[in-house]
Amino acid sequence: KNQVEQSPQSLIILEGKNCTLQCNYTVSPFSNLRWYKQDTGRGPVSLTIMTFSENTKSNGRYTATLDADTKQSSLHITASQLSDSASYICVEAGKLIFGQGTELSVKP
Amino acid sequence: DVKVTQSSRYLVKRTGEKVFLECVQDMDHENMFWYRQDPGLGLRLIYFSYDVKMKEKGDIPEGYSVSREKKERFSLILESASTNQTSMYLCASSEEQHYYGYTFGSGTRLTVV
Image (spheres, each protein chain N blue to C red):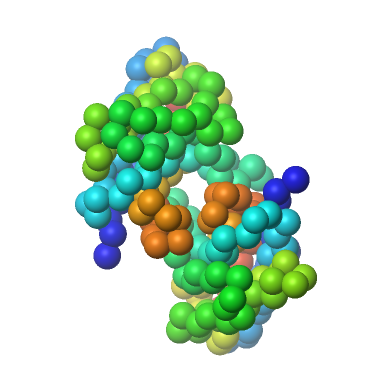
């Protein structure tokens, strides 16, 4: 069964700290994997896009990694800011399989 | 940048009303999608369209219909709104190959009372 699973469901961190969000996918054939950030009440906005040949992709303080062998991806946020509070969604965009998202809350 | 515009941010409708949600994209994308997003359920695909006048059912099409008369516009229609259709509705568009751009609109928060 094609699936994308994210962990943790929710996360609370202090401003300035780093954090890592996880995404495991079982989608075949795999096309590309995207991370989106969704602010409350808004549509998702793309952070990174990776194909199977790409191991890492950065977008400012966001760095995504992809391990095609273990079918795992992670999103690392460095030096978190209050504005990073959002839901982060992992998507296998070839078959449009969405994860449930990780709700990140950054506290002052 | 691709822009996907949804006509309303917030909408309140009565049970039984016919509701139209409009979505317009400005980058000549072939594919357009309608999702609903509910807490704990994530995004679920309602319908998608890969060309003008073409449509395909997604995972939860019941109670919805769509219209794509022009390439840039994809409308979601609730024929007779019900309270269980209260949700966040998200439109998205992409080029023919998903990799080359998949962009969401800002969403419409629909409340059916």
